[in-house]
Length: 179
Ligand SMILES: CC(C)(COP(=O)(O)OP(=O)(O)OC[C@H]1O[C@@H](n2cnc3c(N)ncnc32)[C@H](O)[C@@H]1OP(=O)(O)O)[C@@H](O)C(=O)NCCC(=O)NCCS
Image 1 (tube, rainbow, N blue to C red):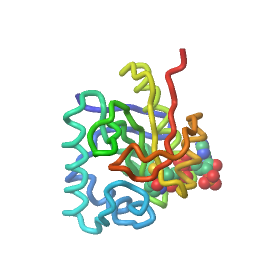
Image 2 (cartoon, protein in one colour):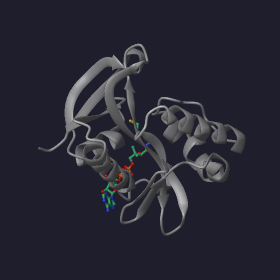
Image 3 (cartoon, rainbow, N blue to C red):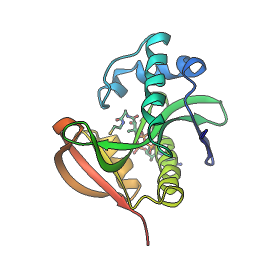
Protein backbone atom coordinates (compact mmCIF):
# COMPACT_ATOMS: atom_id res chain seq x y z
CA UNK A 1 0.00 0.00 0.00
CA UNK A 2 1.30 3.45 -0.88
CA UNK A 3 2.59 5.54 2.03
CA UNK A 4 1.23 9.08 2.37
CA UNK A 5 1.49 10.75 5.76
CA UNK A 6 1.39 14.51 6.39
CA UNK A 7 2.84 16.38 9.34
CA UNK A 8 2.76 20.14 9.77
CA UNK A 9 5.80 20.78 7.53
CA UNK A 10 6.48 17.41 5.91
CA UNK A 11 5.07 14.72 3.69
CA UNK A 12 6.24 11.14 4.24
CA UNK A 13 5.81 9.07 1.12
CA UNK A 14 7.38 6.20 -0.85
CA UNK A 15 10.72 6.91 -2.49
CA UNK A 16 10.37 7.21 -6.30
CA UNK A 17 13.87 6.06 -7.32
CA UNK A 18 13.87 7.67 -10.76
CA UNK A 19 12.40 11.10 -10.02
CA UNK A 20 13.85 11.44 -6.49
CA UNK A 21 17.44 10.46 -7.34
CA UNK A 22 18.63 14.05 -7.96
CA UNK A 23 17.36 15.16 -4.51
CA UNK A 24 18.73 12.02 -2.84
CA UNK A 25 22.31 12.74 -4.00
CA UNK A 26 22.35 15.55 -1.41
CA UNK A 27 21.74 12.87 1.24
CA UNK A 28 23.64 9.76 0.08
CA UNK A 29 26.39 11.57 -1.80
CA UNK A 30 27.54 13.30 1.39
CA UNK A 31 29.98 11.55 3.76
CA UNK A 32 28.57 13.58 6.68
CA UNK A 33 25.51 11.34 6.26
CA UNK A 34 26.95 8.04 5.00
CA UNK A 35 29.62 7.78 7.73
CA UNK A 36 26.86 7.15 10.27
CA UNK A 37 24.59 4.70 8.48
CA UNK A 38 24.55 0.97 7.72
CA UNK A 39 25.02 1.23 3.94
CA UNK A 40 28.13 3.45 3.79
CA UNK A 41 28.60 3.54 0.02
CA UNK A 42 28.91 7.15 -1.14
CA UNK A 43 26.43 7.61 -3.97
CA UNK A 44 27.41 10.66 -5.99
CA UNK A 45 25.76 9.70 -9.28
CA UNK A 46 22.10 9.53 -10.23
CA UNK A 47 22.54 5.86 -11.16
CA UNK A 48 24.09 4.88 -7.84
CA UNK A 49 21.57 6.72 -5.69
CA UNK A 50 18.67 5.45 -7.79
CA UNK A 51 19.88 1.89 -7.16
CA UNK A 52 20.03 2.64 -3.41
CA UNK A 53 16.46 3.97 -3.34
CA UNK A 54 15.29 0.91 -5.27
CA UNK A 55 17.11 -1.34 -2.73
CA UNK A 56 15.32 0.47 0.08
CA UNK A 57 11.96 -0.15 -1.60
CA UNK A 58 12.73 -3.79 -2.37
CA UNK A 59 13.91 -4.59 1.18
CA UNK A 60 10.82 -3.02 2.71
CA UNK A 61 8.39 -4.75 0.32
CA UNK A 62 8.74 -8.01 2.27
CA UNK A 63 7.41 -6.37 5.46
CA UNK A 64 3.81 -5.11 5.16
CA UNK A 65 3.24 -1.87 7.04
CA UNK A 66 6.96 -1.24 7.53
CA UNK A 67 9.06 0.80 5.14
CA UNK A 68 11.88 3.09 4.26
CA UNK A 69 10.25 6.31 3.09
CA UNK A 70 11.12 9.75 1.73
CA UNK A 71 10.76 12.83 3.94
CA UNK A 72 9.56 15.64 1.66
CA UNK A 73 9.52 19.28 2.70
CA UNK A 74 6.05 20.50 1.76
CA UNK A 75 6.90 24.11 1.00
CA UNK A 76 9.75 23.33 -1.41
CA UNK A 77 8.52 19.89 -2.58
CA UNK A 78 12.08 18.62 -2.00
CA UNK A 79 12.96 15.15 -0.72
CA UNK A 80 15.30 15.97 2.17
CA UNK A 81 15.68 12.64 3.94
CA UNK A 82 14.63 9.13 4.81
CA UNK A 83 12.58 7.88 7.73
CA UNK A 84 12.39 4.14 8.21
CA UNK A 85 10.53 1.59 10.26
CA UNK A 86 12.11 -1.81 9.59
CA UNK A 87 13.00 -5.11 11.25
CA UNK A 88 16.11 -4.57 13.40
CA UNK A 89 18.83 -6.99 12.20
CA UNK A 90 20.34 -9.24 14.86
CA UNK A 91 23.93 -10.35 15.46
CA UNK A 92 23.73 -12.54 12.31
CA UNK A 93 22.00 -9.81 10.29
CA UNK A 94 18.71 -11.70 10.47
CA UNK A 95 15.46 -10.01 11.66
CA UNK A 96 15.65 -9.90 15.48
CA UNK A 97 11.90 -9.74 16.05
CA UNK A 98 12.31 -6.08 17.06
CA UNK A 99 11.36 -3.14 14.86
CA UNK A 100 13.67 -0.13 14.54
CA UNK A 101 13.08 3.47 13.58
CA UNK A 102 15.83 5.37 11.75
CA UNK A 103 16.49 8.71 10.05
CA UNK A 104 18.84 10.24 7.47
CA UNK A 105 18.62 13.91 6.47
CA UNK A 106 20.69 15.91 3.98
CA UNK A 107 23.01 18.21 5.97
CA UNK A 108 21.37 21.38 4.55
CA UNK A 109 18.19 20.40 6.40
CA UNK A 110 19.73 19.68 9.82
CA UNK A 111 18.82 21.96 12.69
CA UNK A 112 15.10 22.47 11.92
CA UNK A 113 13.52 19.60 13.81
CA UNK A 114 12.56 17.72 10.64
CA UNK A 115 13.92 14.33 11.78
CA UNK A 116 12.08 14.62 15.10
CA UNK A 117 8.84 15.71 13.36
CA UNK A 118 8.95 12.79 10.91
CA UNK A 119 9.91 10.31 13.65
CA UNK A 120 7.01 11.38 15.92
CA UNK A 121 4.56 10.65 13.10
CA UNK A 122 6.15 7.26 12.39
CA UNK A 123 6.21 6.26 16.09
CA UNK A 124 2.52 7.11 16.23
CA UNK A 125 1.87 5.01 13.12
CA UNK A 126 3.87 2.12 14.62
CA UNK A 127 2.05 2.17 17.93
CA UNK A 128 -1.49 2.86 16.74
CA UNK A 129 -1.90 1.54 13.18
CA UNK A 130 0.61 -1.32 13.42
CA UNK A 131 0.02 -2.01 17.12
CA UNK A 132 3.72 -2.55 17.83
CA UNK A 133 4.48 -2.99 21.55
CA UNK A 134 7.92 -1.36 21.28
CA UNK A 135 10.09 0.47 18.75
CA UNK A 136 13.90 0.44 18.96
CA UNK A 137 16.67 2.66 17.58
CA UNK A 138 20.41 2.09 17.36
CA UNK A 139 23.28 4.47 16.77
CA UNK A 140 27.04 4.64 16.81
CA UNK A 141 27.84 5.94 20.30
CA UNK A 142 29.45 9.19 19.09
CA UNK A 143 26.59 10.25 16.81
CA UNK A 144 25.47 13.14 19.00
CA UNK A 145 22.82 14.46 16.62
CA UNK A 146 21.10 11.10 16.39
CA UNK A 147 21.36 10.57 20.16
CA UNK A 148 19.63 13.92 20.59
CA UNK A 149 16.78 12.87 18.30
CA UNK A 150 16.28 9.70 20.38
CA UNK A 151 16.23 11.74 23.59
CA UNK A 152 13.81 14.32 22.11
CA UNK A 153 11.49 11.43 21.21
CA UNK A 154 11.50 10.24 24.82
CA UNK A 155 13.22 6.96 23.99
CA UNK A 156 14.88 5.05 26.85
CA UNK A 157 18.65 4.52 26.69
CA UNK A 158 19.34 0.79 27.06
CA UNK A 159 23.11 1.25 26.84
CA UNK A 160 25.66 -0.36 24.55
CA UNK A 161 24.79 -3.61 22.80
CA UNK A 162 26.52 -6.02 20.38
CA UNK A 163 23.30 -7.84 19.56
CA UNK A 164 22.39 -6.07 16.30
CA UNK A 165 23.68 -5.28 12.81
CA UNK A 166 26.02 -8.26 12.71
CA UNK A 167 27.55 -7.56 16.13
CA UNK A 168 28.46 -3.89 15.73
CA UNK A 169 28.97 -2.07 19.05
CA UNK A 170 25.91 0.22 19.06
CA UNK A 171 23.90 2.18 21.56
CA UNK A 172 20.35 0.87 21.82
CA UNK A 173 17.23 2.91 22.61
CA UNK A 174 13.62 1.85 23.00
CA UNK A 175 10.20 3.38 23.32
CA UNK A 176 7.22 1.30 24.38
CA UNK A 177 3.62 1.96 23.51
CA UNK A 178 1.94 4.14 26.12
CA UNK A 179 -0.84 2.20 27.85
C1 LIG B 1 20.67 12.40 12.83
C2 LIG B 1 20.04 13.55 12.06
C3 LIG B 1 18.81 13.07 11.30
C4 LIG B 1 19.63 14.64 13.08
O1 LIG B 1 19.25 15.80 12.40
P1 LIG B 1 18.90 17.13 13.24
O2 LIG B 1 18.51 18.16 12.28
O3 LIG B 1 20.00 17.39 14.20
O4 LIG B 1 17.65 16.63 14.11
P2 LIG B 1 16.22 17.26 14.15
O5 LIG B 1 15.63 17.25 12.81
O6 LIG B 1 15.48 16.59 15.24
O7 LIG B 1 16.50 18.78 14.52
C5 LIG B 1 16.94 19.14 15.80
C6 LIG B 1 17.61 20.49 15.76
O8 LIG B 1 16.73 21.43 15.15
C7 LIG B 1 16.42 22.48 16.09
N1 LIG B 1 15.03 22.89 15.81
C8 LIG B 1 14.68 23.99 15.13
N2 LIG B 1 13.36 24.04 14.98
C9 LIG B 1 12.86 22.95 15.59
C10 LIG B 1 11.54 22.45 15.76
N3 LIG B 1 10.48 23.07 15.26
N4 LIG B 1 11.38 21.27 16.42
C11 LIG B 1 12.44 20.62 16.93
N5 LIG B 1 13.73 21.05 16.78
C12 LIG B 1 13.92 22.21 16.11
C13 LIG B 1 16.68 21.86 17.44
O9 LIG B 1 16.92 22.83 18.41
C14 LIG B 1 17.93 21.03 17.13
O10 LIG B 1 18.99 21.94 16.99
P3 LIG B 1 20.49 21.66 17.46
O11 LIG B 1 21.10 20.86 16.36
O12 LIG B 1 21.08 22.98 17.56
O13 LIG B 1 20.40 20.92 18.75
C15 LIG B 1 21.04 14.17 11.04
O14 LIG B 1 22.14 14.69 11.74
C16 LIG B 1 21.55 13.14 10.03
O15 LIG B 1 20.89 12.86 9.06
N6 LIG B 1 22.77 12.61 10.27
C17 LIG B 1 23.40 11.68 9.34
C18 LIG B 1 22.69 10.36 9.29
C19 LIG B 1 22.54 9.74 10.67
O16 LIG B 1 23.39 9.90 11.52
N7 LIG B 1 21.45 9.01 10.87
C20 LIG B 1 21.20 8.33 12.12
C21 LIG B 1 21.96 7.07 12.21
S1 LIG B 1 21.73 6.34 13.81
